[in-house]
Length: 167
Image 1 (cartoon, rainbow, N blue to C red):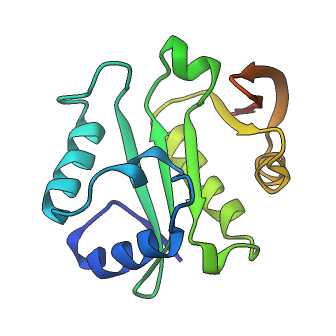
Image 2 (cartoon, one colour):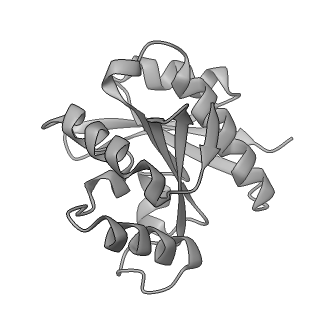
């Protein structure tokens, strides 16, 4: 397993991952970006990472791909800081595991690797949020040192807001 920055070597695997997701809500949010032009997608992810040309309401963020051999098995996104909206419901880290690879501990591994990236960026208090009814996410967050800080109502959902303190 390796955590990497997005690159063109994984275009076919990325497209297979998206196809496998079907109509499922895309987590983290960059999985929802248009990928018809793969080079344009990579350029957009790089702009987000560098903090250039960021749309209103968004903040700079780094997207990481978890790969196993030549297969993209997970995606995480690390927001470099939080604005008010994202601090309320969103947090620093969002992630997802390819449906066929779920239930094998890859989420815990991907979160741990992304937490290491957050610490390298100097983030001391790392916020990770999940929907209350998403028990696998809550367990993954707690397994990586997350402590439940609060719960809020966000639309029809209850969002649990966890915090992980950097070592």
